[in-house]
Image 1 (spheres, rainbow, N blue to C red):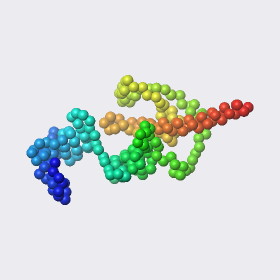
Image 2: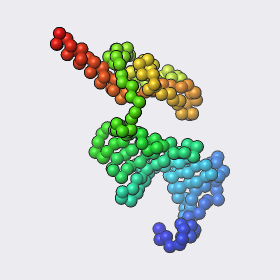
Image 3: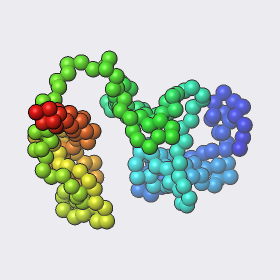
Image 4: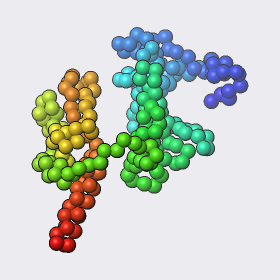
Length: 233
């Protein structure tokens, strides 16, 4: 490996790395990078995709290993963030990064809402629980009655909604249905669509399970008040 001595990478590596003249597969713009001896490297480039360890990247960037593990390293100096920025229409939508406080964080474009996990922990912590960040409270009423409206509570298996086939035949999950939760927490229901590869334009419902935990805490308080009233009767 040569030592970088010029003002740019190209000034040092101009004779060490070069594009092949042959195209790769169906993409006429795809090329391998060769070393000075004409040997193909593990890097392939085209006008639309980059492959590391593969001549046929299936997505914009693919890192593949013929054997063993395959990693992508994102490093920073001490006391600096390291991670990824996700853009949409030239605006930052999400951050995924390791913070200077030794937390793995997944946040929104403002970097003030999301989740984080500290080194050594096994659960995600919500970002933004500080009372100074919240206003316009609407306190739950009759939380116990809302909880009692939920009927589908148990275990289930996932199916492909298009084919109705089981997607994980050997796995059972625990949960609720978004349709029933919508009846008691309508503002907390979200809609999403599957990736384009599934050819399914249906909008499906989802919700955050921790929302039910908050409602359940209020229901427990109401139930506790009923028990206390009976004991004092």
